[in-house]
Structure formats: C-alpha cells, structure tokens
Length: 97
Image (tube, rainbow, N blue to C red; front, side, top):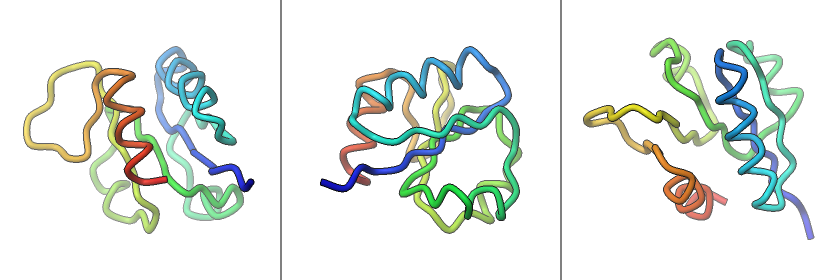
C-alpha cells in the first residue's frame, strides 16, 4: 500500500512538530519544514498535501500546485480549508488523501 506524503510547513518549531506527529499517526510519510520552502524544495519531497501552520505569507499559498490545509490554533474567519483541532486536521486529511 502506497503511503501518502504530507509536508508540514511553518515557522514555529513546536507547532510543526505537534502537527507532524499527528500526521504520522495517519500512517503517512511526513516531512516537517521549519521555514517557507521554495518550489524546488517542495518538488523534491513530492507531497500529496501540505499542511501550512499559520502564519504563512499569503503569496506562498497562491503559488502552490498541491492541495493544502491551513492549521491555526487561533480562530481565523473565512479561511478554508482551515483546521484548528487535531480532529479537524484528521478530517481534512481524509478528504484530500
């Protein structure tokens, strides 16, 4: 069975680690990235989906070709797909993968 690849992106190390740990429980290959990757760096990992831990520069989201989930523990209005709990993150991952 082919494992899905998830790239977790963010500047807060603890948040990226917590989200990455949860994604590992989904039986996926997880690549935590503690900054903003270049398109070339994303292409090296070939993720099926990205989890973007806010705050992330908005222009970064617009250049992505892969589906992504936004993660924030803060309430953010009108952003989709946004997950703010691990249950919501699991639900979003299951929709995309």
